[in-house]
Image (cartoon, rainbow, N blue to C red; front, top):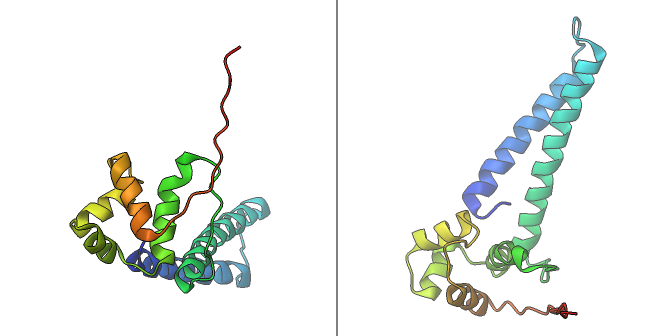
Length: 144
């Protein structure tokens, strides 16, 4: 997942390199390379390129404001949702840190570790500052 502008620029550059490599492979004849190996190379590069393009599209959609809601099927997805919420709100990590009254490096650490070191109170505060509303049902398994 792309979490900031720096990662976005790096991912975009990587996608361009993969595109160029794929075009070069497809344009060149491959003497001496067995057809299965050639196909495996093309497929592997194509798969990597698809993954990068999917990440770029997700970041662009969040950043542009086109994506206002994400499905959250478990609490394990909450850290990713907080990061998506920050991006959708148009806030940098530094701007979120200022709103929380903490150092930017702390937000970077939270996001790098997917909020593992954050307390529940901090996670709740981040969600509140970002205006994230959770609509999730809890199902209880009753003891028999």
